[in-house]
Figure 1 (cartoon, rainbow, N blue to C red):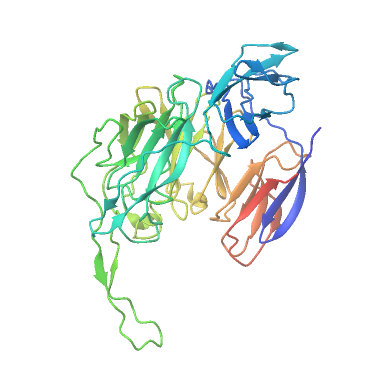
Figure 2 (figure 1 turned 90 degrees about the horizontal axis):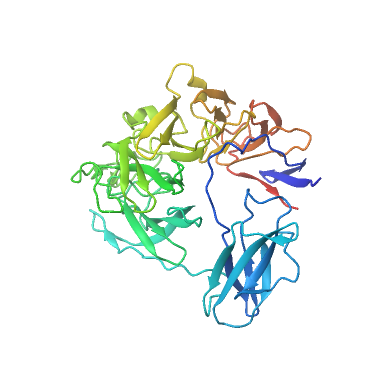
Length: 476
């Protein structure tokens, strides 16, 4: 039985724990993607091509694989120790590789897959052409450019292969803590050959930055084709050119001049400054589900929750109100749901939605403003984790120092507040339950190792500083 050596790292302190990987999750009922073999070939160096492929959950455990190049088998024995093969191939000509499963010594036709390595392929990567957006100009007259940013994947056309959903980030994108106009956020869809299928423009009323746009890509209605779900606003434009909401609305703040207070001991009069320029304090927000195939907006509903009074989120500058997270979770153990989240420093709201191919419906909302949820406020991270932590076959959402049950009820809160990083798995081989390794910024709790289902702290490294990062890794 294999054991893994895990290192839990925070503030340069290290502990070791063995892991004997187990899981209580029942995957049999889940509506899953119908993926193909996913064969990819990349030139490793001048004399070698590396071929990799997927091992599928529908493959028997003892499945082996034969690899063919241009119709001829190149594996003397089936590959049995992984899903990767290095082919001695010096020619710069194109080559078509095929992977065929082998079960009990016989080739099967279960999810065969092939990939053509192009002639004169680059070394070490696949070249995917992209359509870089044109430069833009802000209302203040400043020019900005675009660069590729976050990406996700999904099978948008039902062929069993993934496409890439890519966000273009303008060069003037801002963290929530900073003022300034930003360019418009653009979302593209590409096939692996570089074919661009569509572009969505989120418009002037969605600010650009790391915390503003969490886009979920998944087959939510079990039709074999992934959808894209994200927050939109008045003036967002879908992949077919249709405008969402009011095309004329512009909620960006022009900014106001103010004179900072003098610092103690400073005899000079501070220079006036411009504040809040480019921030968005008001305006309608929507949750939109888009067709993964065309980028068309299929339905838009009011985003839950609306920002409303900014102070309720922790400040009046739309900094803490506009911290967003999102995830896909099997909340009923069968169907995937999208969960959109807002806020983690003070008020926190998680809202679960289902898409049946025609209607986007809100199944539950967890709000720390609701009576009984007060202890869950201010516990969020810059990230979250999804797992069936209590073994009931349904996913829970670990939201920093607190956890929300699959039914939208608060499960527990440790009260240790915000932190930047956390890891969740079964670290301890003597305990079949899942555990969480997390760090905290409260200058007290340092880093903690807790039971995922109950929040009980198993091990702790308290510290009087802000522990901004921690990690866990299977290093052997």
